[in-house]
Amino acid sequence: MSQVEESIEVHVPVSAAYNQWTQFEDFPQFMDGVERIEQRTDTLTHWKTKIGGVEREFDAEITEQIPDERVAWTSVGGEAHQAGVVTFHYIDDHTTKIMLQLDYEPEGLAETVGDKLGFVKRQANGDLKRFKRFIESRGGTETGAWRGEV
Image 1 (cartoon, helix red, strand yellow):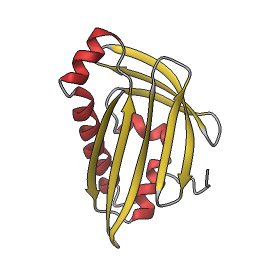
Image 2 (tube, rainbow, N blue to C red):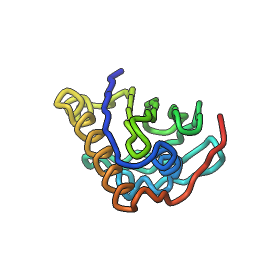
Image 3 (cartoon, rainbow, N blue to C red):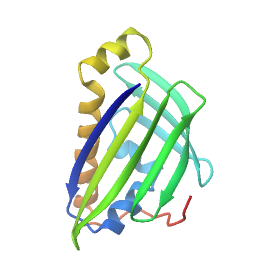
Image 4 (cartoon, helix red, strand yellow):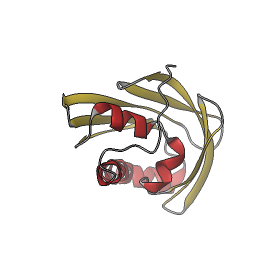
């Protein structure tokens, strides 16, 4: 199992950053390699990805969700094996630190080599930077919100 930890500060309030992160179907707008996400239930999403030419489809279950604090998930079935958590930390009224921790199992030679070369770490870092641009370019106005707890 490999692990990635990345963080970024975004210039929006905690609630705006958190609310936007709960809009999983918008992830393809800022996550490279994510082609589509379907929200099937409050706790189940279906992902279609294509990263480095490798296509995967899998379901992810939200295992913990606390408004303005954290979203945790794990893959269930499908072609990817991962789990992670994103936490949201108040810096000031207009700044939030987002921390991502991702555990994943590379499969096959290409993914193992990519993992050793730091591809997933760079991908996660780039996705967080694109999230920052996405939410900040909207003036901190999220596209939606889900404030339920899991």
